[in-house]
Image 1 (cartoon, rainbow, N blue to C red):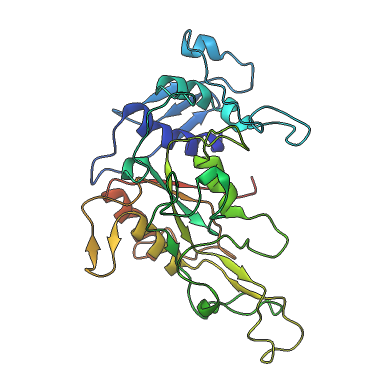
Image 2: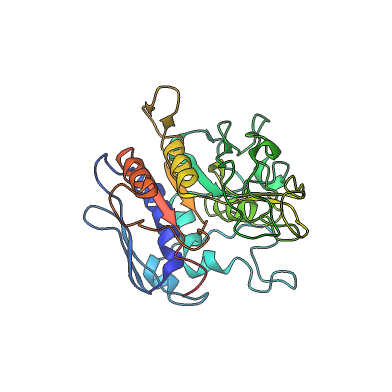
Amino acid sequence: MTRISAGVWYALRARLTNTTPSRGRQAHAWILDENTADFGEGCLCVRFACGRDGGAVTQFGAITPVVPYDPLYEPSAQFPYGQHWIETTKVNFAWALVGYDQYGSPPVDLADPSRVIAIIDTGIDLDHLEFGGPAGTEGSKIHGDSRSFLQDGASSGVLWLCDCDTDLFAPQPPEDTAVLAGLAPHGTFIAGMAAAYANGDGMAGICWDCGVLVLRVMSYSSADPCENERLGEQLGTACWQTAQTMSNAIKFAAGGDETIQQYLPQPRARIISISAESQGGYSGLGCAGHPIADAIDEAVMQGGIIVAIAGNRT
């Protein structure tokens, strides 16, 4: 089973067919084997061969794949395998099918819900060149409604980190502070894989003409306001994702409006990407009434497509 392909083809289904799932109908994609992605009745079914040189031309006819000029796309000393996931899943052929042309593509509305990917993660590097700068600046991919969903007092799970103190984190902008000091900013990397500009720098995102709605559910601060309350030395303050903050973020992406307690006519983001595991698992996730399960059901009813990780272990 090819797990990474599911998320890729979830997004491409909407791009290739220029459609969105009807309300009340769940959009599922099953990777039947390493050569088949099946989206069910009435949906796109694509066969592809894995590997850089595996049968792509015969599978896609005489289509010439798009090759972006971003330096990390091809293998290099810095990035030995390049963006291997693009060629493995044949997204470069899908780019050709939908008419991608990084040299002459017309401008697009990066706030169009069908062109926005919600990134539920650790935030984003607001000044990163791959996203065009902070929200509100010309050419920025970062949606103006980007914000944080953190739960005050949520346990850090360890004695050497203080429990979540939301006073340390402004709701906006959702700057990526990384989960812990010294670790890579996870949310920025996920946003880059999904939607980085094809601009001759860094990498090319799977949907390089998509915007990102950044919803921060995890964050870290080197401040330790609980240092006098616990034994030992604290290394900072951590806000981990909880079932409630994950639920709130999913609903917000789907168009939930806290003020009027109902959904907007359109979701804020048609595709909702979740690359965040819980600390120890979400108990009862498969049961009716679980906040995350309910949020996912509501998002699908709003026409959303949910892309979630299978985990870091197989």
